[in-house]
Length: 98
Ligand SMILES: [Zn+2]
Ligand SMILES: [Zn+2]
Ligand SMILES: [Zn+2]
Image (cartoon, rainbow, N blue to C red; front, side, top):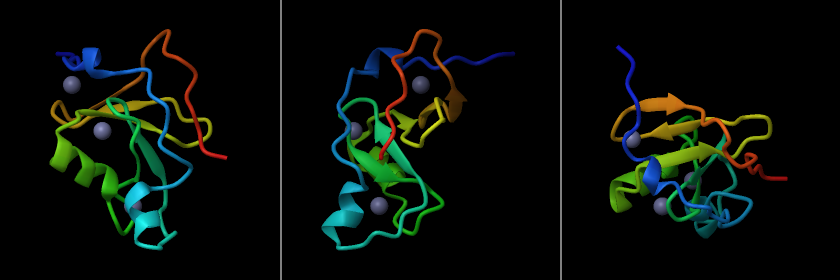
């Protein structure tokens, strides 16, 4: 049985908020592993392998459902409520940080 994400209408044409995790930078830290971009508001935050886990924290505080990888060469999306990783055909080119 294949599952599909039911939150695709919450993917916006977002501009990433910056080149680093918003919360880590605000705390003066620079120790994230990978970056993710919220597809509802463009908030950039660090992944679950990073000390801050701010992408997941952003989902918890805002309930914005979908993130996309912000890493060069990675094109996937992840939906928190569906616990589903997927790629979208015809999606805009993945943004990535410098
Ligand atoms: Zn979903
Ligand atoms: Zn962070
Ligand atoms: Zn968001």
